[in-house]
Amino acid sequence: MSTGQLAGKVALITGGASGIGAGVAAVFASQGAHVVIGDLNGVAAEEYAASLGKEGHLASNYALDVTSRADIDKVMKSIEDSLGGVDILVNNAGISSVRDFVDITDHDWDTMMNVNLKGVVLTTQRVIPLMKERRWGRIINISSMAGKQGLPRLAHYCATKFGVIGITQSLAFELAPFNITSNAVCPGVVRTPLWDDDANGILNDLDGENGWNSFVNGIPLGRPQSPQDMGNACLFFAARSGDNVTGESINVSGGQQVH
Ligand SMILES: NC(=O)c1ccc[n+]([C@@H]2O[C@H](COP(=O)([O-])OP(=O)(O)OC[C@H]3O[C@@H](n4cnc5c(N)ncnc54)[C@H](O)[C@@H]3O)[C@@H](O)[C@H]2O)c1
Image (cartoon, rainbow, N blue to C red):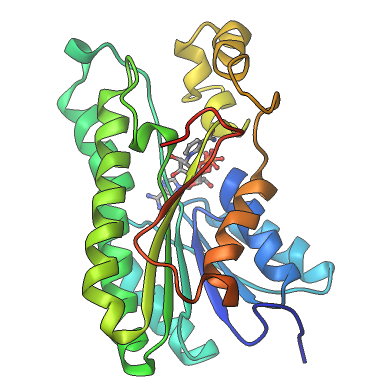
C-alpha cells in the first residue's frame, strides 16, 4: 500500500515523458500517486514509466495525442478500466516556436492552438464527468510566464498560454460546486527539449546560449527553474494543501514575474 500526500490517487500527466511533465510525474509518484504518462512520444512514455517503476513507484504509460478526441477517449477508457479513472489531471503537453509576428503562418498558428489550447479543452472535457460524479477532482494546467506577459516573437505561444489561464479561471467557477479545483502553474525558464531540441528547440531561433542567458540573467533568485520546482508547485494544488484554492495561476519563476 502506497503512502504519501497523493496515496490512492491516479494522476494523468500529458506530455509527461519529458521535461516539466516528467518532473511533475516524479514528484507525484514519490508522494504515492499512480502516475499515468500520456505522451505523443509513446516510446519515451514507456521508457519513463518503466524507469519510475524500477524505482518502486506506480506508473503506467500511453501513447496519447491531446489534439485527438478519439485518442483521448481510448486512453481514458483504458485508465477507467484498469485504475478506476483520473483523479488529478495535469495538462502539460505543449509546444513552442519563435516567429516574427508577420511571419506566423497558418500552420504555426493552427498547430500551436491545437496542442496548447484545444488539447487542454479536449482532455479536460473527458475527465470532468467522472470527477463530478465523485465530487472530487484536481485540474492543473501548465501555462507560462508568457501567459501573463506578452513577449516579442512569441505572440502565437503567448495567445495559447493566456488562453490556458482563461480556461483555468472559467473552470474554477464552473466546477467549484462539485469540489473540483482548477489551477495553473506558470513556469519561468526550465531548460528542457522545448529550448534545446535540434529540430524545434526555441534556442535555434534565439541566438543559442545568448538567447538562454538573456532570459536567465534577469531572474532575482539567480537561477533557472527545474522540472522538480514545477512538480512541487503542482503538488501544492493536488494535495490537501490545495483543497481550498481554485482559479489561481502561480508563478514559479524565481521572482522574474510577480503578477
Ligand atoms: N521549459 C520552459 O521553460 C517552459 C516555460 C513555460 C512553460 N512551459 C510549458 O511547459 C510544458 C512542458 O514543456 P517542456 O519544456 O517540458 O517541453 P518538452 O518538449 O520537454 O516536453 C513536452 C512534452 O509534450 C509532448 N507532446 C507534444 N505534443 C503533444 C501532443 N499533441 N500530445 C501529447 N503530448 C505531446 C512531447 O512529446 C514532450 O514529451 C509546455 O506546456 C510548455 O509550454 C515550459
